[in-house]
Image (cartoon, rainbow, N blue to C red):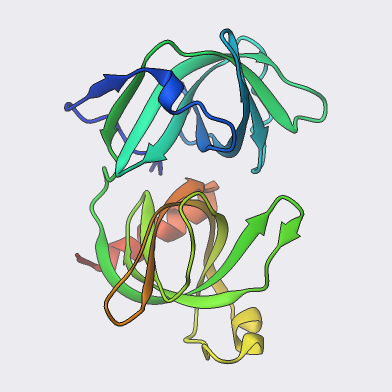
Length: 227
């Protein structure tokens, strides 16, 4: 089971200048093996190349000449373009790719979502470290991501998510930090809002899952009801 969204039939295209701006988070997806995904931030875009600072684990078999897909999430749409890796340093803390000429768009959500009420431990990842864990809950869950409630996050935040075995005390950090994890995933916040009662919600797209995590997620989804 792949956690990467599939292209829909309804597509549009825009010029890449609107999206290849420094500081924008992107997902880098292997064009041939879509389960190989990592997160990055665009550090520089020129007329011929794009440099991406990696904030996620680097797939070890990527090298110059390898084809990957850049995915940028904005306004409910995934904008994507295939590019060629042109340079990888050692250690691989960034990638340099060819600059795309056209970026195509598709609907962000391509997986059915299942209704749930699962406790989640959330850590926001920063360039210089991580923030303390906080507790939230998953309101729905799918192969590509989740809707998280109870944690204030901003679009573009990178987070580490642990779906927990037991309900945790939202007022006790010890309860958050010591609860056992059923599933761990890293994700990108692609939507954020608050309702009239002041509850914060964040739409999170999963970045990558290992084989064991994919199997666990598939098992969880099989036990839930469609949202």
